[in-house]
Amino acid sequence: MAVSVIPVRRRDRRRPALGSHVFLIVLTAAFLAPVVWAVLSSLKEPASIITDPLGFDPGTSTLGNYRAMFEDVPIASGFLNTAIVLVLKGGLTLFFAPLAGFAFAKYRFAGQNVIFGAVLLTLMLPTIVLVVPLLLQMRELGWVNTYQALVLPGAVDAFAIFWMRQVIAAVPDELLDAARVDGCGEFRIFVSIVLPVIRPGLAGLAVLTVMNIYNDFVWPVVVTSRESMQTLQVVLATLAQNITGNRIGADFATVWGELLAASSIALIPLLVVFVLLQRHFINGILAGSVKG
Amino acid sequence: MTSTEMRERTPAAPARRRRRRPSGRRLAPYVFVLPFVALFLAFSVYPLIYTFRLSFTAWSGSGPARWVGWDNYTYLLGSDAFWSSLGNSAVLWLLIVPVQVVVALIAAVLLNNAKLRMRGFYRTVALVPFVTPLVAMAQIWIVVFDSDYGAVNRLLGAVGLPEIDWLTSTVWAKPTLALLFLWKTTGFAIVILLSGLQSIPASVYEAAELDGASRTRQLVSITVLLVRRVVLFLVVMQTLAVFQMFAEPYVVTAGGPYGSTTTAGLYLYEHLGRSDLGTGSANSFLLVALVMLVSLLFVRLLRERD
Image (cartoon, rainbow over all chains, first blue to last red; front, side, top):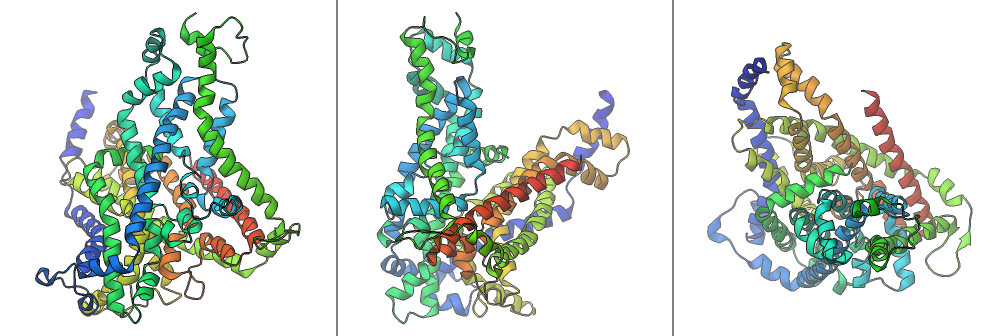
C-alpha cells in the first residue's frame, strides 16, 4: 500500500478554497440569524421592533416585553405542564425502553419476532395518522385535558426500544452470566449490570427524549383544549390570541414584543442543554439516523 | 448445561427439569416487554381498529354512528379539497427535498475536509435550528416575514429589491413555509450526510486519484454513489415529514391564504374541527396508504440505480 500514501497526502494538503468558507459562513449566518434576531428584538422597546426591525441599541434594551408577556400569556403553567410531562413520559421511556431492548437483545422467547414487528410497525406509522383515532379514544375514556392523555400514548417510545436493543446487544454475555452464577435475578441484572454499562447510550437517549417531548406539538394541541392543561408548545401556538385577548386594543408592536419574548424564553432551555451536552446530542441524532 | 445453551434452547422445549431460576429466566423477557406491549395494544392497535370501523360510518362524535360503507373514501377521492391538500404537500415537497439534499450534500462534503478550520463550530451551529421548538420559530417567522413591518422586507427594501407578500399571497406562502422547514431541518441533514461521508474509507478516493479522476468527478461519482444509502434515508424521512407537515401551516398561515398552505396533515386535522369523524378516519387511512406507497417507490427507485 506504499504507493497510495502519496496521493493521500496530496489530497489532504489541499486547503479548502475561499468559496467553501463563503458557503459555510453564509449557511451558518442563516442558521443563527432568526434566533439571534428574535432574542435581541425581544429586548427592544415594542415600537422600535416595528419602526427599526434591523437595528439594535443595547443602551435602550428592556425586559418590558417579558414582564408584560408573563401577565398576558399562561407561559408559567405551560412550562409547568411541559415539566410534568417531561418527568413522567421521559421517565417511562428511559426505564422501560432499555428494559424491552434488553429482552430483545439478550433473550430468545416465543413471540419475540411478532412483538418486535410491533415495535417496527409503531416506528413506521406516521404520527399524524394516529391523532384522530387517539383523540376519539381519549374522548371515550374521558381523558381529554388530563396528564395521562399527554403521557401514556407513545410513552415507551418504539425508536428508543429499537436503539437500546442495539446498544445492549453489544454488552458481553459473559458479564450477564457471571452475575447469574452469583445468584443475581434477571431484573437485578438489568438494573445493576446492564444500565450502568450502557450509560453513554442512555445519555444520548435521554437528551433526544427530552428534546422530542419538549418540542412535541401535534398530540398536545389536539388533546388539551383547556388552558390550564396546555404544554408550553401549545401555549406558544396561541400566543397572538392570548395577548390580544388579554390586552384589548393592544397594538401590533405590543403583541409582537410579547410574542418574541415568549418565543425566546421557550428557545433558551433546549439551547442551553444542547450546548452543554453536545456530544450526547449528536450521538442521539446519529443513532436516530440508523433506524432507516 | 452452560447458560448460552440454555438461552438458545427454544422456549417450546420442555422445561420440566428446570427449577425456579430457569423458569424465572423464561418469564423475564415477557415481563420486560409487557409495558410496551400493553401501551401498543391500548394506544395503537385499539384506536386503529376502532377508527378503521369508524371510517365506514358517518359520525359527529355523539349519538349513534350511521354505516355508510365506502362513502367516506369515495367522497374524499372525489373531493377537490382532499386533492388540493395533497397537491399543496407535493409542491412543498418539491420546494424542500431537492433543495435540502443539494445544500446539505455540498455542506457535508466541505465539512468532511479535515483541513477545514472551525469544523466543530459549523457543525454545532448547524444543529441549533434542529433543537429549537418549531412552534416558537413559526411565531418568529410570522413576525420576520410580515409584509409591512417584517425584517426580511425591510432588508430587501434596503438593498433596493422589491418587497414580497410572503405570507399573504398564494404564490409566496408555500415557499415561506418551505423556508421554515428547510431552516429547521437542513442542519440535521448535514450531520446525517456527514456521518455517511465519514464512513467512506479514504482508500476509495486514493484509487480514484490514481486512476486520474479529477476532483470534481471524484466528488460526484464516488461520493454520491457511496452516500446513496444515506441520501435515500434522508429523502424517505423528509418525504414522510413533509406529508405530515402540520405545525408550520397551523401556526404561521392557518392553511391560508385561500387554502394554499392547507397541507395533507392540516387537512386531516380540519375534519376534527368540523366533527366529521368518519371522513377524518378515512382520510387517516388514505394518508397512511399514500405515505407508505411513496416511501416504497423511493426505495425501489434508488435501488434500481445500483
